[in-house]
Image 1 (cartoon, one colour):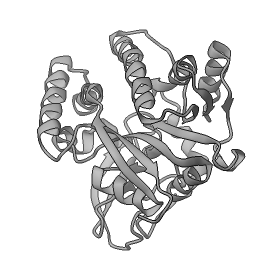
Image 2 (cartoon, rainbow, N blue to C red; image 1 turned 180 degrees about the vertical axis):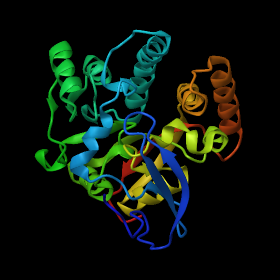
Image 3 (tube, rainbow, N blue to C red; image 1 turned 90 degrees about the vertical axis):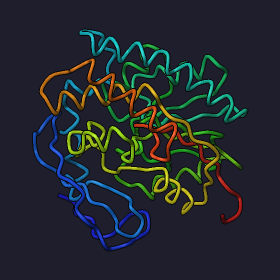
Length: 298
């Protein structure tokens, strides 16, 4: 196990246990979520060593790396994903008029293919062999297995996206520093991550599916992710809620808590969480952030 004694955001050493979470997807082991008493950033600590994390992804519940539509839940997920791809491409168009784009954790390639069809020059990174092969075979995309950003040229990309990927990255500060190196002047980073300050997170507590320990290493709020990116000379330009995520996370959380996917309960909790998130500072279950590379120190 890897045990951190300092917060990766502020380097503070006062880490307090926040709650215990069971890995419902694979191992059924219990993991501790800690919170930094200095900056309020939360993370899984201790966590499995980096070379062991792959074992925790071997679950039928991890459906973002497949195109499986069997069963109502999978069908709903894939249907919403198709709609969400269009909204993501539109966000990219509004965010970056320049055309060289990198999608990190591109999965089976649907979003990256849509970007390519919209006129972007695209490259992707996907460590999962199953998902990567689908992206290459289905869409003839340029997708690398290598997750090291040093493989790219300085200033090669005008924009980078990570859709629910940053929370999985072991080397958090190294990765964001790498963004700065491979982005062009005023390049943009589009990040989507769960928000552990949301109403549904507070409602479900240790059963909240988006804790997803241990494969979710880091647990963000708007304040903590902004502090992290400011540290690496990025400025927050905009944020927007991912409204469908609240329903998806609530349905999974219901299953973790009760053993059943209670669709009515899940829909109700997701709806309440969205309403509270939109009209208060809590935010919704998941949030998209757009950061811009700064040429001078913030």
